[in-house]
Amino acid sequence: MTGGSKRWTCVEAGCSYELVAADVPSAIQGAQRHIAEAHGSFELEEMIEDVLEDVPDSAAGQTSRAARSPGKLRRG
Ligand SMILES: [Zn+2]
Image (cartoon, rainbow, N blue to C red):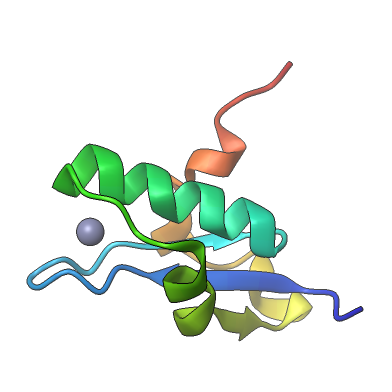
């Protein structure tokens, strides 16, 4: 298995939203939530996986633009 975070960038026109998740399932979940809440639409998992980018571990903690990543909001 490949470790490391994944970055997803919204492909909707005029939207530059992006998020960083710890793994692929989390990235898909966050992406689908954004698509639903921001665009009232739905994106297939395959389409999301298609545009995921690898994020080197060394950079994972420094992506300030991902501060609102939905995956980090809940704390038990
Ligand atoms: Zn968007």
